[in-house]
Amino acid sequence: MSIPAEAAASAPAPSPAGGYRSEQIAVELEGVSKHFGKITAVNQISLQVRRGELVTLLGPSGCGKTTLLNLIAGFLDPDAGEIAIDGRRITDVPAYRREIGIMFQSYALFPHMSVAANVAYGLKMRRIPRPEITRRVAQALALIKLEGLEDRKPRQLSGGQQQRVALARALVIRPRVLLLDEPFSALDRNLRASMQVELKEIVRKLEVTTIFVTHDQSEALSLSDRIAVIAQGRIHQLGSPQEIYRRPIDRFVASFIGDANVLRGRLVGIDGATAAVALGQIEVSVASSGIAGAPIGAVVDLFMRPEDMRVAESGAAVAADGIVAAQIYQGGHVDLHVEVAQARSGRVVLRLSGQEGMSRWPPGTRIGITLATDKAIAFQTDGC
Image 1 (cartoon, helix red, strand yellow):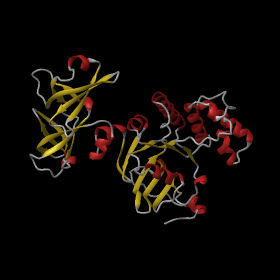
Image 2 (cartoon, helix red, strand yellow):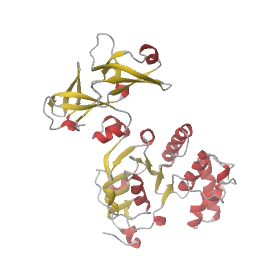
Image 3 (cartoon, one colour):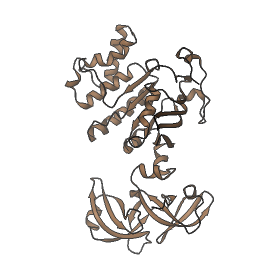
Image 4 (cartoon, one colour):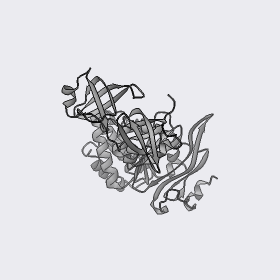
């Protein structure tokens, strides 16, 4: 049911669905959907974001994450469901009245305006008194470490500096919620990493509730309090970075987040919440939820992170053996690509610290592989 904008301020908050007290919730979505013709971009998504929390919407291109951000911002209207900010339903409230700060992928700075004028723009539109604008712009520029550049135009700034100006413009209005749409995508790798650290420090300092959109898994893992992994308009899993990485709820999340090797194992037993899967001479313990209903003796897929697999020492039990196909030097570690018959793709990657892998196991070497018996995730095979 929609409500007029004038009534939004007095409308009751939606009832919490995630176990948090209503005063802890900054943003709440209940059954939100959006269609573009026959295409369902967002499909009955419900989500709660706590005050001061940084939640990342993570997924591949076309999964619906940017559409969801635009629905929260008010640039799009949902076809179903309700949206609330700080306990007020704002589903029908126009974007300019939602008190949201937005940083776009393109930064969207005004090229004819100075840095100070760009930052001040939102305050002027809100008719804030000039002395207060001057004070708050100075504070914002100090926060992003751009003092002394007030009079420069965007074209006179580096990409990282332009990004800081866009962030300051979003923060200077003191938003209830900060929305970030892939803000680091145009930066080079080193600058992107440094800006991630600075962004995290700033949002923590200001305690501003932040919703961040990206398709970059490492970015999501490093920045987020929680991650919502999205595909085909639905949230597949919502959890901390550690939960998403170590306890993926389904095959999509396990495959999409980080690197994973998939090996064929054999189910040997289920005992309540845990199951035992044999792979070569090794038996690993996994959560049984991913293989519920599989008969004993069935072939199941074991997902293993590259850092949880090692070259077996002589005489040790091995999960599989194979031939080193390639060595990829990555500075702090070496990736060994090994041809393994039990692997779904025909190869696995072992991530070894230091440079030992370069000298001990050159291409063509046959090696045995062992693995951490408590780090695997198992799912029923999809028949491929």
